[in-house]
Image (tube, rainbow, N blue to C red):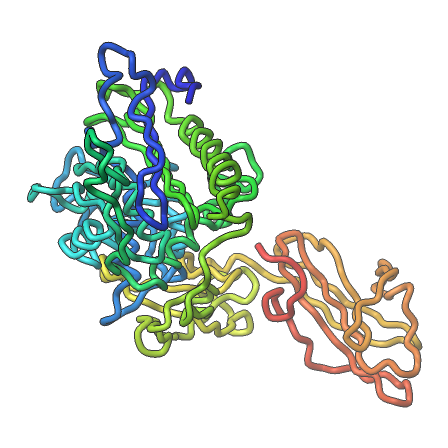
Length: 521
């Protein structure tokens, strides 16, 4: 557990819990027991540390996914990533703001995306929906019994692990509860106690535990935390930052966390939780006195947990027959795959998209060419109706629209775009195109005969389609042109069975979305 020089930290601790039994199987309380200043302090049991974002799956999303009354939630639910300072800061005008580590807001993203990328807004909204007391009750029952214990002055900031503390060993055990499908078991440190005569005084025995959450809820959390694509923008699978998230040959679910020093953005704690079907492990890295680190890198905890999780599975649990490569949580009965708000994801059995999704359908009008919301100046022939879905944000009360790509409801049409136009005719056995450019230069064209693309064609300066001759059996000839902005228009002629072509007077202009051709903006 070296490399602390990367962020000028002086301490690190790790604790590991057996998922099946909640026995503590590994514990390193500090970087050096012989350090006279702090080495004998067991950080894993004796210290209370802020968990940062590692609390989100336990406190925020597990209780949210448990909800059966009213609107139900799953990994595919949308909680808009937006500025909520008006509510979060409760009227405070100075020293309060909530954002993401990236400094950006991401709009209408799913919970899978928000949790995978550790965004803060959705986590706070989840806690708001659940109610703080309800969320704390669930977190305590899962094993995080110290979180906000004895406190009454907490607020929404505890959703992102700020203001309340956990014990490392309890936090690892809370994740063990999720790993075993939502059932809590007491931590076990001692398996047997004997007296001086060698007589057994006390023996540990396993228990069935207490079910805290439905196994479908635990599965949905694990499914997100093990999904490399859910964190792709930050920790791309296969990249250098995937260490610790991806353990070779071992299925794991992972959540990181960081904390900052008081009234600053300087990182104080670096944390990571990693669990499999067999082992739950939590790692902390920081300074013994709580002072800030020189870097916000989580390389140290990621590499530590990655190395440990690989070896404990392959060198201990595998040989003992308690784990096999490829082991991962079984998909519980009832978990369903649905498309809601245009997003396909997994949902619990009690979710009904028609009754308790909070989703309504509406039809909006867009400019078919530039894909912006139609305005008063949008020409009628440019307009297209598109079905969208609408939900009401449970925290802000604002309408949230989910609009299919490439349409954009957030920007209204300025009516300064004109599409390319064309018409087709036949001269002898040749197709002739009359093309009129629009706002952008033409970029290309594609010819289709009887619906099949034909290559090797070119347009002459007079519009003759060279490289193609009308022959018997041709029924339709269609030309699609596109401009440099990616918009397209098309025209089609019909050819009768006697090979005498006739011109369809109805020239059609369509955008790429309707015709599945061309590009988007």
